[in-house]
Image 1 (cartoon, rainbow, N blue to C red):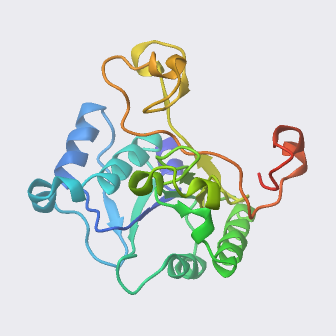
Image 2 (image 1 turned 180 degrees about the horizontal axis):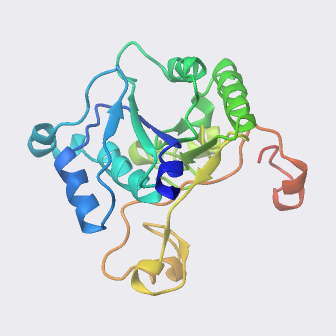
Length: 245
């Protein structure tokens, strides 16, 4: 009965940027960790499950492949759906928000592993997203969003270094900065039996010392929003120069 009750819950994974997932990899993952064999449903924005594509182009089989495996591990009996949107084409993130509003019922859990520097989010996009997430929350839903892989400065440092930081400031990732989602970052240390600290590729000696063999490839994102108001319960934890959460 418990498994039947759990199967009534639903999870949705947002995917984009030409990412695919491997059905055989996911089956191996389920067998390795003794998980029930549950399928992945895909909405009608294109089939992204392809063993062949993952073999011929491993780089296009990373984020979505990881997501369909670990969302499965978090709630093995839940119905899992992958929603793909071609952000490189004629669609944008606002279309995803509109499609969410048309879903009946809305998913219980939505996972978004993508983001952009907050400075690139328009006021209309922020309002539409926050309003939709608020409605989902009132229905008992949960939205988890990755906080990014480039620390507090944002992804521009990958190509320009810190040249733009004086002009643009530190850039928290959106939509992880939304007040109506749970932002999820990365930690390190526990995998090698050491104290847990923030994941950092070039961090302080305290963080770097937690790496068992080689330094991590990412630095977990974070920071303070410049577009979201600081909620009262965070007022004592946010610097006076920041207005956000």
